[in-house]
Structures are given as C-alpha cells and as structure tokens.
View 1 (tube, rainbow, N blue to C red):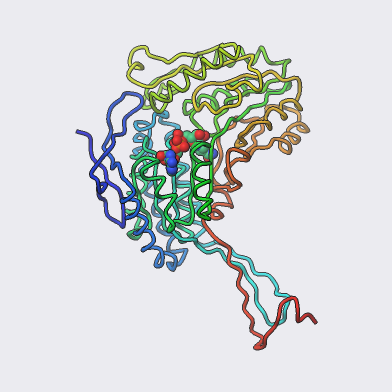
View 2: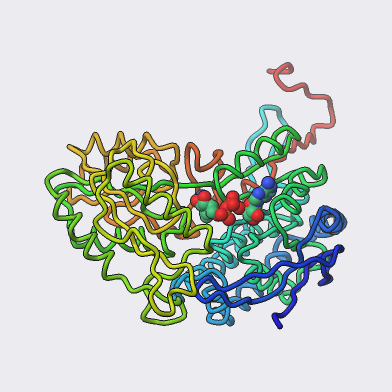
Length: 494
Ligand code: NAD
C-alpha cells in the first residue's frame, strides 16, 4: 500500500476535506509512490484563512529572525541532499546528478534569500525641504499564492517561497500534481526549521480545483506562477481583472547559434546537454540550433551521432544519461510533433520514436531526436515541445541567426558559439532573451542572477538574483518633517 500524504494548513497535516486522493508514480517504472489529497476550493479557503491569520505576526517578526529559519532550512536541505535527489528522480525521472542540481539550487536559494534578512535595503535621499527626512522601504504584501510546475519540483518552489517568506509575506503553495512528494519534503523541512504555523500552507490538487480558487481569492493579492504559457496567460487574465500582482515564468523555445568559427566539439557537447538534459523538459532547454551554412553538415553529423549514443534508462542508474518523460501524455505529445516534423518536410537524423526495449517498456522513454533541414518558421522550430526534440536550422550569417532567434514568441534563453569577441559582444547586445550565454548551452542559470524571460515567456518580473524580492514586496516612501511647521512640497520653495 502506498503511503498517504496530507495537506499542510495552519501548521497541521490533514487530508482534503472531501477525503479524496490522487496517486503519483515513477515515470521510469510506473510504480505508485504515494497518495496525496485531491483538494478542492474548501481546502484552499482553509489555507488562505490560515495564511491571512498568520500574516500580522509574521510581518512584524524582524527580518533577521525570519531569515534564521531559512538558514536552518538550508542546512536541513544540505544534510538531506542525496535523499531529496533520489526522491526527485523517482518522482519525475531526471537523472540523479541533475536531481542533485535541482536540490542544490534550493539550498543556494535558501542561503541567498536568508541573506536578505540582514539586507533588504531601502533608499534614503535628501528632501527638497529643510528639516525633513525622506526614505523608501520595502514592505511585504500579504498572502502570496505560489503555483509551480513539475520539471524543477524543488528549485522553483524555493525561488518563490523563500524570497516571499523572508520579506514577511505568508504563502499558499500549490505544487504540480505530477510532483507532490518534493513539495511535501519542502514544506516538512520548513516546518522542521521552525516556521510558525500558517506562514506556509501547502495544498495538493489540480489546477481547476486548487489553482483556480487560489487565483480567484480576494485575500491573495500576489500570484507567482511558473508553467506553460497557456495556463499562465489565463491566470494573468483572471488575476489581472481582480487587480492582483501576477509574476509569470512561462514557456521557452531556446536557440543555440553556432557560427563558422565556433569550437564545434564544444558546441556539440553543450547542445546535447542543453537539448537532452532533463529529457528536454527544461524551460531553458535548447530546442533550436541556428547554424552557419559553412559548418552545418559537420555539426548535424556530430549531433546525430551524439544523440544516438546517449544512454536511456532509470535516472537512479548512474550509467543513465537521459531519463523518461514525465508521463504517457508527454510521450504522445512528442510523438505528434515528430509527425508534424515529417509533414513539414524536415529530415530526421536521429531518434524519432519511443524507446521500448527491455525495462524501458515500463516507462515513458523517447529517443533523443534531431531534425535537420528545418525551416525557421516550421512548427517544430517555433512551438514549445518540452521533450527531447532538436531542430537544426541553416543560416547564412550572424544577422540572420539573430533575426530568427528574436522572431520567437518566447524569449527565455539563447546562446552563441563563436571565437570572435566582437561578434560575441554584438550577440550579448542583440539577442532578445532574458538569459544569454556565450560559448555555453542555454541551460545552467545561477540563482544569484535574475532569472526570467521576455515576450511570451514572462511579464517583466525576474526571480532570484538581486531582484528576488521584487515580485513579493511593495515600495513605501516615507517623509518625516521635523521642522515643526507646515512645509508644502513644490510650493514653499525658497
Ligand atoms: P502547466 O502550465 O500545465 O502547470 C503549471 C502549474 O499550473 C501546475 O501546478 C498546474 O496544476 C497549475 N494549473 C493548471 N491549470 C491551472 C489553472 N486553471 N489555474 C491555476 N493553476 C493551474 O505546466 P507544467 O506542465 O507543469 O510545466 C511545464 C511548463 O512550464 C513548460 O511550458 C515550461 O516551459 C514551463 N516552465 C517555465 C519555466 C520558466 O522559468 N520560464 C520554468 C519551468 C517550467
């Protein structure tokens, strides 16, 4: 019998009021891992009430004290890193080393966010009047609604929750239904670290039953969302109509540009890692290569050979390089895009089929796939597939590569391989994406730099970095007049 897990509301672990549950399973083996509450609006209501109730005291807890809890949480995460990584591999499939990286991001964020407890700098500035003091300070906003995807089931929730909490907000956290276990671990760690009851509330369940009511609740002024563009925009529409602040991190279609002077061996290695790491299920995954015509054929050959050589399997096996897709639905989606690629006249040079031999038959495996001869406006070159499918597009020159890169509906990450320093700087200036890499693939962001995308990827917010508190705080400007008389700004000018 699979273990049954509970929601965490007001400091208590409890089932959904309806008593209903759903199961999560291992995408490499099909094994059921646990039963989680299939919550509904009534559970969201309880969670928001608990978060709103905890807010007045948490807001007034000194920020360095709030931060101490986060430091403790970071220590616990560090001590349990291997266990958390194994739990993640079992739940969502990414290979163990990558799962360790996901947990490490959470550890890094715990310490980075906790450091803000003794910074959270404001601004003082001279007043235009004599005997008057002027300053701006950050203040928390209230109850933050956090909605997250399954592909970084530990890191992404920490990017949102830990900055929100250190700033003095309370939170209701709705994780993806595919990865409830890692959310359970995160909430348990924060509880163990000493977070007061009600400051963090965790409600399991699907988008319609839990996400929707959270977005609609008037007591939740901020929604921080990471996931697909389709869901993100629908949340923004509903939350925007209610006057809420909405921070969105959505889809990507990230390109690596390879110029004719590039180190092709390095570019090949980096593209394979960016395209097929996490089985292509990273928002920053490389899914397009824009390659100079002079090195096109050679690069395609290297990529095809490299993709075919990647070892598929259970991510717990140290020999595995590519794990499963998250579920059967995603296998079907990838398969349908391969058909679209054929129909569009692209040339398949590697993969293109599910992998079903031996033990792979029990899981959701798909062969790393490379298409060459892809038109820049083909659907496989512009739509997010979120799987191990790479489209190679031939370009005449740097200007054409930049044009194609920037024509994307999305704008998360891009990269260029070149040895020409002038071209590298032109690329840094001209590539319209929130992340730009030079001589590196499109993945590998570090948590102390702002993270987010332009156009269809986001709505102007940045997580992490020095901007980590921005989505979760308001600026308050304060004037203190110690002249003892009425001084009218802009009017009583001497
Ligand atoms: P998804 O949009 O299907 O789900 C994301 C979350 O939204 C889940 O918790 C889901 O239950 C919830 N949800 C679904 N419908 C909802 C509704 N009507 N109201 C409120 N919440 C709702 O995305 P996914 O499949 O979990 O994740 C994959 C997507 O996430 C990809 O598009 C990927 O690019 C994107 N992503 C983006 C970033 C980034 O930082 N830009 C990072 C990781 C993933």
